[in-house]
Amino acid sequence: MYVVRPVELTDIAALEALAAVSMPGVHTLPKTREKIVAMVERSIASFAAHVDIPSEEAYLLVLEAPGEPGIVGTAAIFAAAGSNGTYFSFRNDVIQQVSRDLNISHSVHALTLCSELTGYSQLSSFYVGEREHGTAEAALLSRARLMFAVLAPHRFSDRFFVPLAGVTDSTGGSPFWDALGRKFFKMDFLDAERVIGGARNRTLIVELMPHYPVYVPLLPGDAQAAMGQIHPSGELAFNLLTAEGFEADDYIDIFDGGPILQAHKNSLRTFSGALQRRVALADEAPDRGREPQVRYAVAAAAEHQFRAVVTHCAALESQVNVALSADVQEALRVTEGDTVICVRI
Image (cartoon, rainbow, N blue to C red; front, side):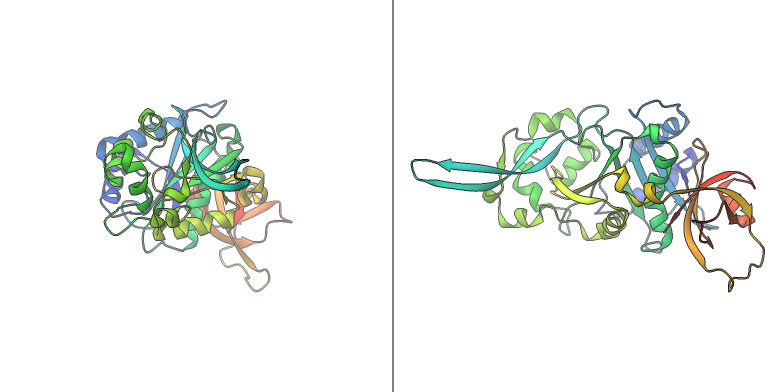
């Protein structure tokens, strides 16, 4: 049985092994041991902290495969984007240009550097192995971040966003970066990503990126075509997030032009569909022909001991309890009478 749980210090070696895998569509996972250790320690401290309002906290979850050492997936959620600075993105703007002398009026598509997403809670660092790609466990890993937010709403903003990796070529080059960011940073796309560790809140961004509107028609055709497009390896994350209720809006990533999806929590399926139920022990050999089984993501409701799994049980809308097998209870570290939250997947 796959389990999603908070990262632990013992996962550092496994995260290093993951970092060595080519992940062209995931720029937000740390790559060096030093940054991996820092992320793990920050996550552990965040889960242990007693929080009144969202601030510096960052929570890293991992997907653990049954009977296998190591981990097969990661997903993170930051309490407040830009909490140690400002989160920068490009806003898609339309600028009206008027010449009274020539009697001309037209609209021009422009990109404006902005910090309007600062303070939103940010989902990032989603990755699953090839075997788990497209499975219910991948959906569980993506959704588990929001299930934790349901359990601890005081830790997060009411609004969430997700930057998805943009289009890059086989060598890691980005046409959007080459047309814009490279001119100011004077380095390759992947080098720039390594310098800032996938973040979008470093002071050097506002120091180097243009503060004036960038006219999109002046960019090369391949850069314009890349705007708002996701890297092929990000399609799974995109599909999971749009099914959840996220939508592409007015913002794109300042480095690779990838789309930024956002949503208010009230429009997300996990928040609107989460059911709180008491744990009951499932029969060892239930009569499955009598009551159809429904697939749910189930998470322990203990804020400081978060764990989540996928299981099947009878539809819960009219139930007070949720019947969980002994194995599922053990995986969640719950017992009969404990409270869990359940979301259909």
